[in-house]
Length: 404
Image 1 (cartoon, helix red, strand yellow):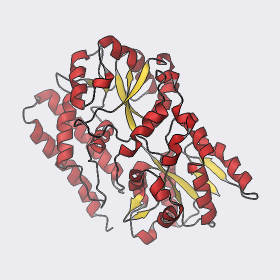
Image 2 (cartoon, helix red, strand yellow; image 1 turned 90 degrees about the horizontal axis):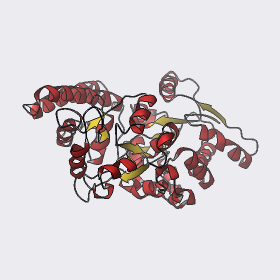
Image 3 (cartoon, rainbow, N blue to C red; image 1 turned 30 degrees about the vertical axis):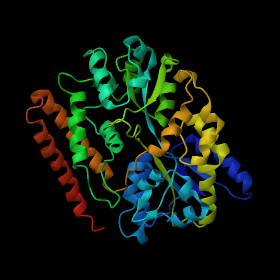
């Protein structure tokens, strides 16, 4: 079997599968995510050779599901998932990005629940009790108390991209598309969320800043206490451990504040699916490999140790490794903390136009932040509605050109 992937942990798992299947060779190739998407799409369209199994990033998955269901290049896994019981044993929301017209074309690799990472030592010094930050209103209140413009900000939020905003939209039950593929990025949830979000990143009472996209700039911002907290899905917690070792023991994690008291206290950021291509000659063996890579308990424990990534398989959440205290995170058992939030993770739905919608929403964020810096609340809601509708109409125009 040939199998492009984006992670070295898959390379480490292959010998175990080959040992269980004498005579079988698995050829694993590490490929950048963008390259996987562009090369595989071209290969599907041109009827060229394709790998037997492929990992695809969540925002790109929908691009492979356009056209009649019969023409999708991936095997429909729905019946296999039912027969194996995985349809019930995997977090339901994680099938939504890889489902089109009722057919599941991808096996979810992850859940990626989101928590809030914060400088525990600085919170304590500033008199911020993380346990009392139950809602975003609580959080903003404390943020306005401790933020010092140009020196210290409560949280890392962007005023030029949609990345943080979309995570908040998912938390509130919104997003880009619904389960039928209809665009909802300009609905009332989005309007209200933008109206709430922009004053946090712009204007005279902001509490957020984004130190930049480079690892060096972010690392310095965390070390210096320039930002006190940031959004942290499970995969990012490992990157932080590696990239910002100087604050080991000073960091901690907490559930996201809820928008309403007692409401959802997590969201999701990122994801990957594993698909079996229709041109795979031995689909049954490919399905066995997929299960081994994603759901074998020994592989899951090793993968968690390397990546901090939580499996979507609920029966894997009792692995002892998830309960191990992490010195970096003030001895919190972070695997259990993420697992405790996993079933609250909201769905996000597949569309060939997800990347376009993300780009357009990012433009809305930038334009609204600029307007708010110049005009404040005067005319702000009208500007938000007009700018958001323009962006959504651009996406709808492109969608209308797609006959499926």
